Image (cartoon, rainbow, N blue to C red; front, side):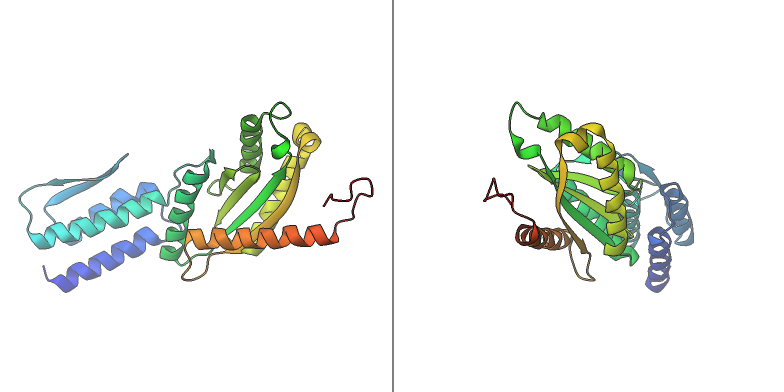
Length: 241
């Protein structure tokens, strides 16, 4: 088969896998169709660890290259299916998930937003609040208020972050209101904790996950400064913000 024809098949396959409504269940079907159209002497199937290829005969260099690119596209499509859903991520896991989501957003021509917020009360110290328990509770409440493919992470100390695929800052602000309401409706959270400064940012056309997170943190810092200047001062605690 001519190289141009294989490139056309790869283009069609990548478009099918990158479609916003592409499901993980469709990956094997798309791969099988691509192999059949390209007359590849192999069978491709998805596994928990990625893609397996069974060759019917020794493949030439062109066939190996074609199947390798197919596998890379399929792995990205499978990753878009939503690993790490339903749990609060640590700082490292959140960073990895954010970069994964940013890559998918750029690949599919979609937007992505990040919110960073602080939970006042976690800094109260040992013996007053069980921080690990509170982190788990805050994460669970936040997850209950967002979509299935949104992500929640604890960045350390009193800092939390949310990733909103297929959303801009307007949608992220609306979603965060639901998170804030969920925390306020919980007796323990409303009694011991409070929401502090919040920052939002949206993935730019050439931005990375790290860059959008940095932008959200910068806007959180700006919000914290505005609050410090505008908040009424407690006369019994002159240094209070």
